[in-house]
Each structure stands twice: as C-alpha cells, then as structure tokens.
Length: 245
Ligand SMILES: C[S@@+](CC[C@H](N)C(=O)[O-])C[C@H]1O[C@@H](n2cnc3c(N)ncnc32)[C@H](O)[C@@H]1O
Image 1 (cartoon, rainbow, N blue to C red):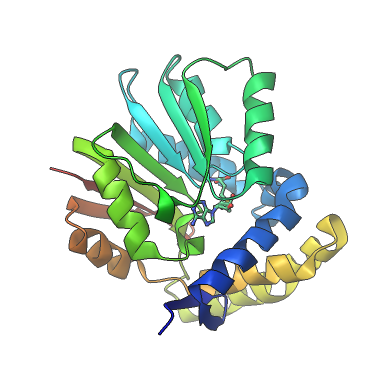
Image 2: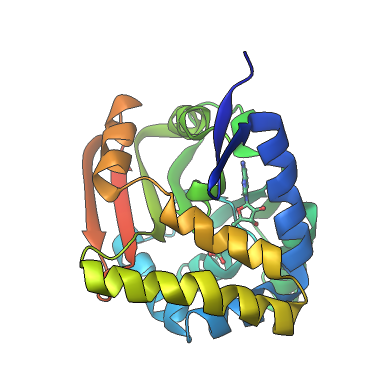
C-alpha cells in the first residue's frame, strides 16, 4: 500500500502530497516574503531573531539549511557569521532561485551552495555541524525519512534546530487564532497573491501539525539526544533543538 500523510485537513498518498506541496510553493514564491510580513504582521522577523539566538551559529559551522525557501534564515545565518559554510536545500526550484538572487544581491557568494531536492532524497553522511529548518518541517512529505536523512548528514556533536507553528493552548485564543488563519489569511492570499487555496493549505497545515511534545518524541525516535523545545511569546511558534551525540 502507498504511504500516506497529511496535506492540510486531508490524508493523501505521499506522491500526491509532494506534487501538491510543489504546486503550493511554486504558486506563492513571488509573493512569499511580502505575504510573510502581512500574515504575521511582521512577527516572523522577531521569531527569526530568537531562532538565531537559539542556534548560536559559529564561524566554523558547516550548515545545512533545509526548506530554505527564499533564503530568509540562510541569509541571516550568513550575516551573523561572515564566511560560514552554508548549503541551502529546498524541494522547490522557484523558491530556491529567489534565495540565490537574494544572496547575490546581498553580496554573499562565497561558501554558499544551493541544492534543489526534497530532503527525503538527500543522502549525505557525517558532513554538517548544524541543520536548520524554519517553517518547513510540517510541509515535508515523509517526516521520518526526512529526520533520518538529517541525522545521518550531521557529524557527531551536530545540532538540529527546527522552528515551526503550534496551535495556541488556550481554547478561547485558539478559536480566535483559527478564525484568523481560516478566514483572514486565505483572503489576504486571494487579494495580494491571487491565490486563496495555497494560503488555505498553509493555515490548515498548522491546525493538523503534530504537537510540540510529539515532535520531541519523533526526534528522540531518530536518536537525537538532549531534545528540548521552547514556546515563543504569543504561544504560536516553537523552537526544537536536538543533538547527534
Ligand atoms: C514556508 S517555506 C519556509 C521558507 C524559509 N525557511 C523561511 O522561513 O522563510 C517552506 C519551504 O519548504 C520547502 N519544502 C517543502 N517540502 C520540502 C521537502 N520535502 N524537502 C525540502 N524542502 C521542502 C518548500 O518548497 C518551501 O520553500
């Protein structure tokens, strides 16, 4: 039987999910950065600042930034540590092309590589000291295979840091938040980016995403150690950390 996984509110074959995810990000690529600012009311910049504080990149790090998208986090990592060795991986060529252009525009061209490939097909061993995923994990088709590949790609002592959304714990706040993600975000998508359904998917994918403690268990199942997470102020974003020891 074909492997299945969640796509928004549906459960579909993995192959179909991979294709649908491609379609979503090809469709949103050109407006992605503007939409991020609009949908989060600029908060993603604060979340990403905290992410960098947690990551604590070092000049000597060899970094794999997975689901790099348009390169927001990768560029921030490169700015935080000049000359850092950085590989940006993303399944979607359109998103990654924007990342490449942004790096060129920022004058950062050395020690940066781009790989257009799903993480589930990325087979490298013992190469990286740091792996980062920002708002990408919940879109992966096969999260277990993705984590196994990331674990194998890390050197001993290497660190994985994942930032993604969570549903608010408080029931009343959760209801309000879901009204925003169910009705307002898709409408912003419709009027600004001309694409309501992709933004509906992004909202639904937050609702059906695994809970923070389940993600911790998943990381431990893959053998990551010292797994911890923190919830950011606002209770809608978490940062998980784990080590290959
Ligand atoms: C919401 S964007 C995140 C972009 C960026 N990290 C940021 O925070 O601005 C999610 C990205 O995950 C990528 N993606 C989805 N599934 C993937 C997979 N299986 N392997 C690698 N990248 C994937 C998409 O193509 C998309 O560019």
